[in-house]
Amino acid sequence: MTNLKNRGKEASDDTLFGTEKIQLKLKEAVTDMHYFLSRGYGEKATLALVGNRYRLNSRQQQAVRGMSASQSQIENRQSKEIQSFDLEGKEIAIDGFNALILLESILSNAYVFKGQDGFIRDLSSVHGTYKKVIQTSQAIEMIAAFFKKEKIKTFYWFFDKPVSNSGRLKKMIEEIALENQYDWQVELVYNPDKIIAESNKIAITSDAWILDNASANFNLMKYILSEMNVNENVICLE
Image 1 (cartoon, one colour):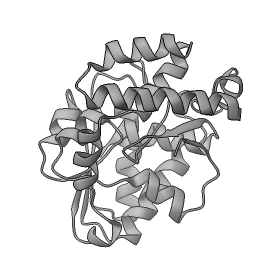
Image 2 (tube, helix red, strand yellow):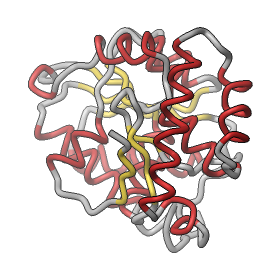
Image 3 (cartoon, rainbow, N blue to C red):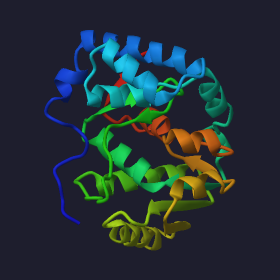
């Protein structure tokens, strides 16, 4: 896997997200999205409407989309959220690329966005190929520290099989598990979202569809940001 410098931050992001004025505009856009979504309007049409209204470029629209949810979605996701003191001896299904890439973005000081549902999302995506970055090993170590501290029984890592380099990442995680005697199962699958949602295990993800459909979830990024004192650029519009 080719090593890159970091994950997720583009040269224009300070201009797009870094000022109080811009953040106020994004907050208004999210408020409008929430209103329309809560009244049953479609996400795609609503995002186009709100994006035009506030003159947001595609990257800003992506951020607004990640932060927005309907009232019923917020209540549903939060009602299924497990707290850290209830994790001991439990089995967890982790959305591998989602969790790793988000944590790599946080460690890279990229902008990440706290949604109305309390889950943090980034602007990175895999695009068919996963490239290891400087922060990859640290991200896995932080997830391992969480696994040990909360005495979790088993981690089931799920990665998209078609993504290039997923096999190498699987091997890397399996070697760490073997070395430390962690009960980690790493699987490459064609539809991780569906498998995680239907697994009846506690889901670790910020993916909206999985959160809507899984029976339980744990907000790992909220936990890591509060427990492990990570420096981050979290855009929080509360």
